[in-house]
Image 1 (cartoon, each protein chain N blue to C red):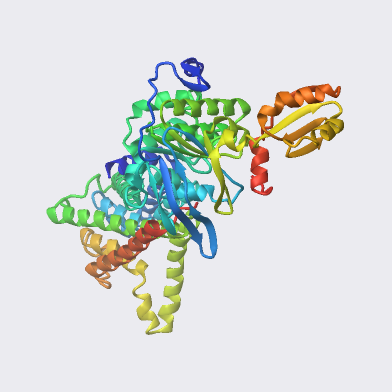
Image 2 (cartoon, rainbow over the protein chains, first blue to last red):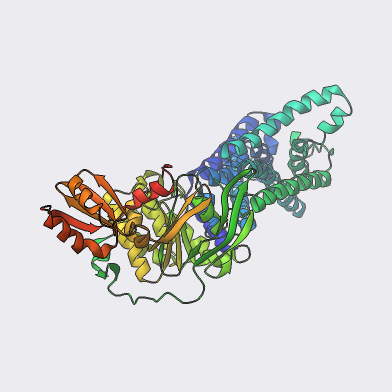
Length: 273
Length: 329
């Protein structure tokens, strides 16, 4: 397995596209801080160290638009460039090839979140200083805050992994980067549109809409990080429906189904590209 | 190939080997490749129909056929990219259905186009392959030198010419120092000098005891480097055998002579002449090859003097077109 990981890491470290996506994420985080920082009522969410939680909240939001691009192109380009033949005529274990790629991509997502946290920290400190609040919010670094932060980090990563895997699976099934990215981004857009339509149609349509993956993905990070914000602030609100455990389970089931489809497709299909 | 590399080659009896290499005798026993009724169907289409193929160790084996004949399908099955519909195959003595990882560890390949990561340099692409296969990256400089890409090693693959891409693919195939090479159109895109270098490289590899299965549309090259060939058409073997035997044209003498029509009339009366073809100043006479001197004397006695008598040899190109009934190569 280490051979596959080393191989995928070399590719990742030399490719510009992941760096561009990470830069877009960092830009999105900065954009979020600038936008929220201009509203006096919301500034309290952005002071360091709550800036970490705000960053995770923003990162989970932008994940829907960024990580499908990485997942779809990473898997689909192997077929588009024909490099899947280069790989499988050297190492024929198709399951490990997919696993190696996913592990490295998810590591990249985690590193991007860490980079986002650094940018968010600086932005939070700057906002604190500019607004006269000070560089550091006092009395926040408690054990419970750190637990909330770690849970939030994992939740944001989990949500990003879901969006990435949707596009990755589609790219494998259709052997195309364009289709992978298209399905990854398009399915999100479609869910938003259908949710609005179904909700207005009443049950059972409204009930179905409540179980769309984006409902769980949107609720998860927000509900996990909410307890870490000052009481009464806009981000301290916990939706509670669906519950955190329900969101985790639902997204987990969706990912297992997508991975099962992916592994089935790569294991049994001929490589003719 | 670099000048230093070429200088390190010696030619003995038409076989080019490295001067410092100890030739490895082809191991006795199992063939390098053996297929048994190997078949591939895509729905109602039979891409490969009960192929029985045997490639001996240490030989260069040519795999020929028109487009769609089943060459690439066969190679893909031997490399585990596609699964046979029925039949079996053994590569280096191992079953392709059971032992593909071990087969690939000892096999270098190039299937169809050279495929690499366009955003990586030539060197980094080889590093990627080395990492994937657990080969020490220390081998990369010598491989780059071998395929004459040292100067372009740091350029992105997407900026390479087709010939450079092809050479990099051959280099990647050789990276693991494989026992068996399966090369699909390795001369594609190479200029004449590159084709000659490729030919020398193939011969050198044979001299080192390696087995090469090669498909190519450059039939002239196949004719010059392959020990044996198989010609496929529409998924079935049309013919296989040694190149020199297939191209010997049987017992036929080619006679170049002024007054060919008169000469044909004279020879036509001889009972040991089975057939005569007339083509301008050239006669093709079906007879025992050791009749050449007798024919020369006979024609001379009638005042007809041949300026050339030799055994008839077909080109592989003509032979290919004959056995595939003119299907495009």
